[in-house]
Length: 145
Image (cartoon, rainbow, N blue to C red; front, side, top):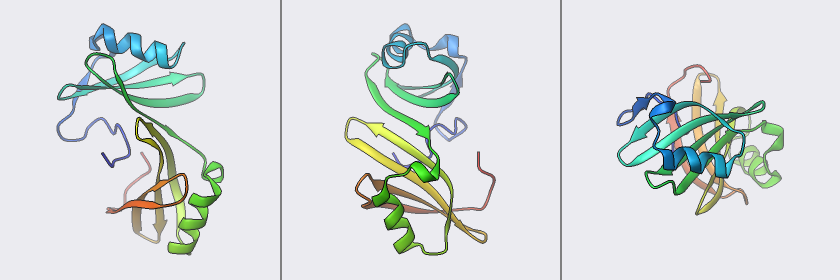
């Protein structure tokens, strides 16, 4: 799934009160990130999404109904992106600036989802840690969140 994870209002998702999350999901959140506080939730089909805070960090998690972890996303500073990711962006999109970057972890590995901008044009680029481009989408110009 290639989106900046958990812009909760996406089509197909139903926003939930965090207290409505299944106990299996709540337990899985605490097992994955002990001490995390669930501040938002959604359901899409049989998958649940939890927006959590852990200290100053804001992390989005996805779980199946049985509590199986599916994905985790967290915003990161552009300067902390792996060198290979920055090099690919600099080479393919010279003159574009990074307006948002996220690290996404899933059972298939780590990827980075980066929104780049040049003037009014915006693109969302998904890359592996090695800087291999997996997908590029053009976005309409709008605010960062």
